Length: 227
Image (cartoon, rainbow, N blue to C red; front, side, top):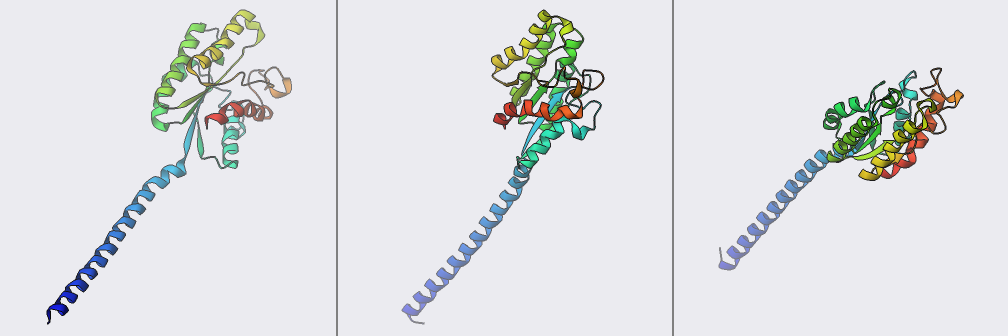
């Protein structure tokens, strides 16, 4: 073999090896990208989590759970193709103390993006000290924010028989905490519902199914900016 022929053979072999190495590298890159996509896709499909921490007003007391405003919220999100899953952690009869006690495990389990706090009504109906209610709600807000969640506080009012001084001070707690911690606030969850006979069950405390869309409409404008 002449020198020129040998040189040509060496160049051709080097070029061939270069192409093979290039194709191998391309294959490795494709495998890596597929692996990344597979790992990321479930997280994207799962979307965010909205945790509702409430009492009987959010647990659909006396109703089919599908008729409650929390389930109606999930339905609305699904209809709008919003990638959020609503977790209803509401227990009938719960107080702010109970909610504060069970929140940490719910935060750890669900890692919510948004926490909706609907508590305090039972505190007021039992005439509990306002300082206790405020401290518990504050603890819930701080724990939620520390976990990285955005917070929406649903304001409550009490029946007039508790007296204007107690009622006004009770209602003011929600506004004070919302301002202090810069969280969203619904002024009154039962606006347009409470005190309206056709909207309330026979106990005059728990809303009927007909009232649930109104409750959701009260929440929605304040929740939407947090999504």
